[in-house]
Image (cartoon, rainbow, N blue to C red; front, side, top):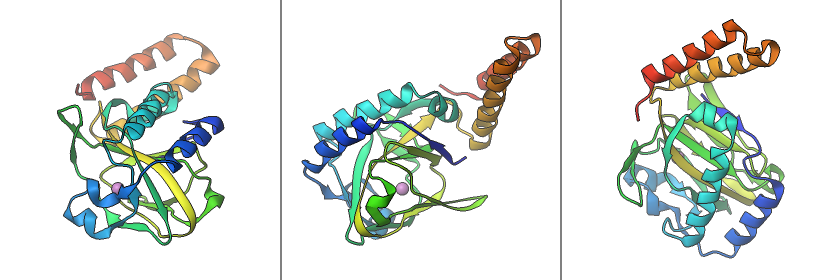
Length: 225
Ligand code: NI
């Protein structure tokens, strides 16, 4: 499932993030990838141990924890602290798949079920720079308003097109979901969405209560914690 999550950060929050990020020191983005990624990755990142990245990253994860659409779609168990990247002057990131397992800075490992990209530049501020995600439904080009996030399966082949003008600033991170299987997670999200709609129409009728129970029983069957 590829899902647009709008309004993760407000306009004021985006402006504050950008001011702080523009004053930071950036490094070559190849710091955080394996050998295949290093051949195709051409961008800059904040160092993963940067206190600024840690602080802004915590704010992003806190905002997402309060975002009902994100929580319903991702069913997040834990996330890697967000990283920040910038592309300009033709920088790009060729076709790749994100690594399946990542080490957490605080110790332990995380299985990357879902990838997220949070846009911090407005689409009109740069040329190119589309995130292109290939899945079983085809090829999707993504370029969202600042403050919006795209959630997609980390198993997808994807790339970032060259930024030929202006600058593209984003945060990105990976999440281990309570439900590993993308199809099961997608079914739960669609069931949840429809049950919420029925509840708005009918209140807590016996049918709505029963369907809510089915959602939770499927979640119980399919989740791993
Ligand atoms: Ni990637």
